[in-house]
Image (cartoon, rainbow, N blue to C red; front, side, top):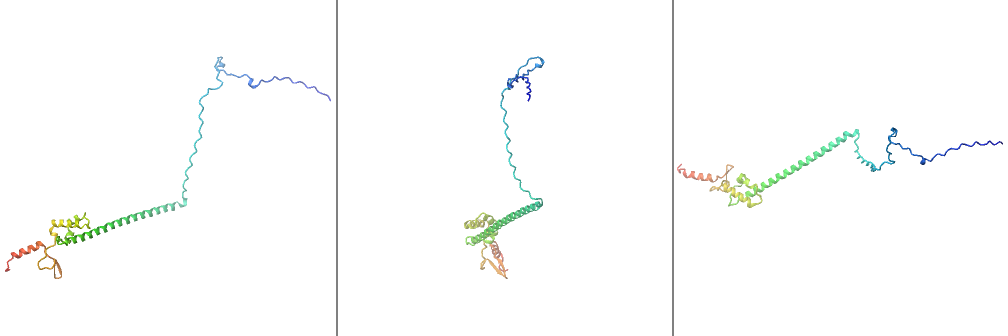
Amino acid sequence: MTLIPRTPRPAVAARPLIWNRPRLRFIEGAADGEGGSIPPATPPAGAPAPIPQPPAPAAPAAAAKPEPKGDTVDPYIKQLREENAERRIAAKQAADAKEAAEKHAADLEAQLKQLQVDAAVRTIAAKPDINGNASALLDSRALTNKLKSVDPTDTAAVEAAVKEVLEARPDLKNSPKVPGSSGSATHTGGHTTKAPNLQQSIAQQIEAQLTPKGN
């Protein structure tokens, strides 16, 4: 076997390391042949930029009420209207019933007071020292006005009112009895007539005295 001698390779110059390479500097205005200032290797330190905050999470949307289906909208609204109408009718009926009850109670109270007034006036008018005409007194507007503010169960107050009216209106007293009559009324032919009052009795007596006896 024949050995072929190897041809030696030319030596290659070693490349300089990266950190040993010269730095390229660009001088401002060098192209125009003028010298410029060398920029700083690092920019000046400034205030740190604010870190952006993440946006707040949005509030969850309120759950929407389920809408009635298309085929049940009209019946649903109709039901609500009927319920509202029933409530209005019930409220009006209750108000009317309350008003009627209050009016009935007021009427009963007025009737009771009138009965008490009638009984008190008749009892007081029948006293001998008063001798009042109960019916005439009860029909008297003067006594009615005085008794409006008087408690009918207060006998003393009712009697004082009756006496005050009789002093101003003596004609409201009972008429004196006609001699020979047994009562304040005479019955003739089935008809009841009231006895003449005091003025009529005096007028009859004067007329009898002036009339000649021969006639």
